Every structure is written in C-alpha cells, then in structure tokens.
Image 1 (cartoon, rainbow, N blue to C red):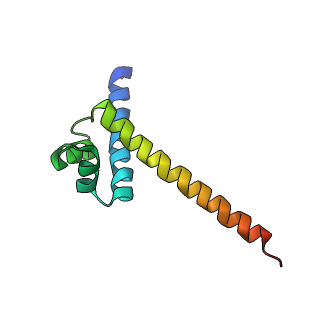
Image 2: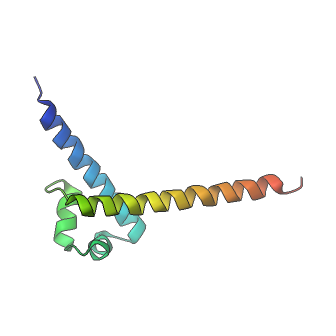
Amino acid sequence: MSRPDLQYRGMAKNVYSRTVDMASEILGGQEAVASYLGATPEMVASWATGAAEPALDFFLRLVELIEQKTVFAARSATVVRSRRDETPK
C-alpha cells in the first residue's frame, strides 16, 4: 500500500522540475533562471533534477513568470485572430 504523503512529495518534485524547465525555456537556460532569482546555478540544477525543492518564494516567482508569459502569448494570439477575422475576404 502506498503512502499518500510520499505520492505527494513525488508529484511536488515533478511540478518543481517542470516549473524550472519552463522558466529555463522562457529565460534562456538554468543560469538565467538562477540570475533571475538570485540563486546559484547549482541550486536551480538540483530543483530541475528533483534532488531538492526550491524555497516557496523562488517557486512562486517562477510560477508568476510562467503565468505572465502565458497570458501575454494568449493575448497576442487573440489579437492575431481578431485581425485575421476582420480582414475582408
């Protein structure tokens, strides 16, 4: 029988790792993520591999970065669709 607390910890590491991966893609790499957060590249690498978990404030800053990028992309796509729909055919 599996323990729910262990399952959650595994999921959390996965979420942290994915968050670091997405932020790395947005900012241009793990070193850029480290610079953005004021952390060391080694810390970021350990979060990416799941060897460690970031402090909550670091994690939330990364989530905020991803959210801003996602919202910007969604708004841009909406503008493009609106302009395309307004173009006479």
